[in-house]
Amino acid sequence: MRIGVDLGGTKIEAVALEGDGTVLARRRIATPAGDYAATLAAVRDLVAQIEAAAGRRGTVGVGIPGALSPATRLVKNANSVCLNGRAFDRDLMAALGRPVRFANDANCFALSEATDGAAAGAQSVFGVILGTGVGGGIVAHGRIIAGINAIAGEWGHSPLPWPEDDERPGPRCYCGKRGCIESFLSGPGLAFDHGQATGETADAAAIAAHAAAGDGAAAASLARYEGRLARSLATVMNLLDPDVIVLGGGLGQIGRLYESVPRLWGNYVFSDHIATRLVPPRHGDASGVRGAAWLWSADEAP
Ligand SMILES: [Zn+2]
Image (cartoon, rainbow, N blue to C red; front, side, top):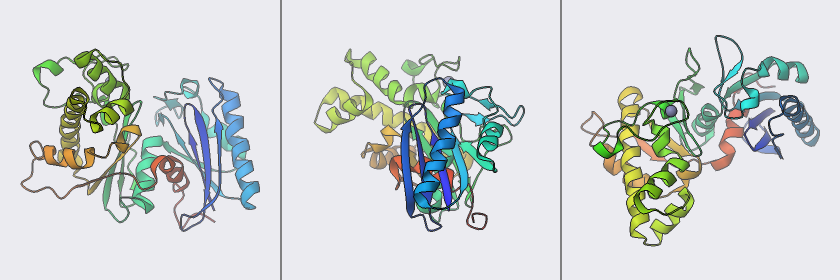
């Protein structure tokens, strides 16, 4: 049995999977806000509850925001900032008394969809998170490519490619740069762009709903978003050329992206023909926690 834990900024989710992906137990709790020791204890207790419910002991994989720095072995780049600078891996292994595997949450998402999700059977997969932020993960031949700096797939803080004049220098990003892909393609990025164009305050879900209901201004904002997404994905395709791209996060639920973006990316991808599939996730919000469980592969899990 494999246990996956998805440590998010607002909730911690855990799941126990059978070898064929069947869910044996599932739990979800609120993340103790800003409290490292309480977060550690919450994950430990969640694993204990899952094992009690399933009646078995399992392997444990954990998806975290940010990454474990290969240089310091401490957490970096986490938006749940109480984790940053902490030896979360060693602390949790000590609390659970067993080896635990860790991966970035976007990498877990990509692994889940590549293992038994929308990209099952693909040789290479780029899993995208379009939500509060913009992340990404790469899976090749069933394994996460984490990268020597643990930043593989982090396309959100590269600049928006082929920018129009009115996209330069672009919005300021929390990372310190301007014009990052994340500052255009995150939910807040779409809302900001729509606000600049219309003076309206609406979040990404409302903009998508208004566009679907025939609101011209919302449709125009979504069309700008689609063009930017197509350009941004084209640079990923030119570099990585994945078989499948899966769009997760809240904005991945906007159905028209799956038709509009492949119509647009041909202008930018360096190929006469494009066989790449752009697909929604099969496991939706559960992909992060399932991918964490799959960090232990079939031949390793007891
Ligand atoms: Zn940035």
